[in-house]
Amino acid sequence: MDIQIKRGLLDVCVLASIKYKDSYGYQIIKDMKPYMQISESTLYPILRRLEESTLLTVYSVEHNGRLRKYYHITDQGKTRLDEFANEWKEIMSVYTYITRENDEPDSG
Image (cartoon, rainbow, N blue to C red; front, side):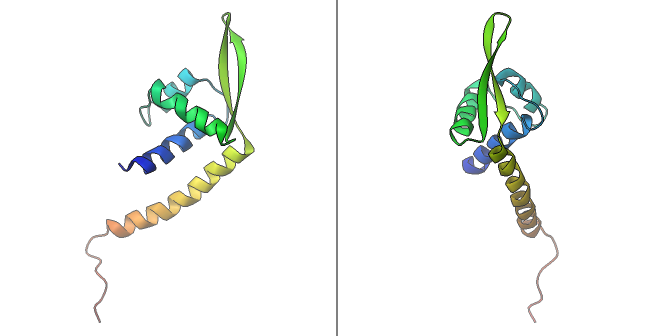
């Protein structure tokens, strides 16, 4: 898969994983596991990039005597998910065109 496409998909998958509930790194990995494999070494740079792009915010909560970072999607992050959904419709249209069979245009 093209690296830029995969990068974009990973970004929106991470945003989707926190769309309805704030979460922390390990939980995000577990939530994404049925759909796509992601390692900690891949996830944390994505989270930093999304934070720098103001698509999510970070806050800490004490858990068992340690601070745990939680990630919260921003309104801008939710907008990015909506944009992706619209982009995906266009991608699926192109996919349908590319993979069509026995549908050659009339040559006149």
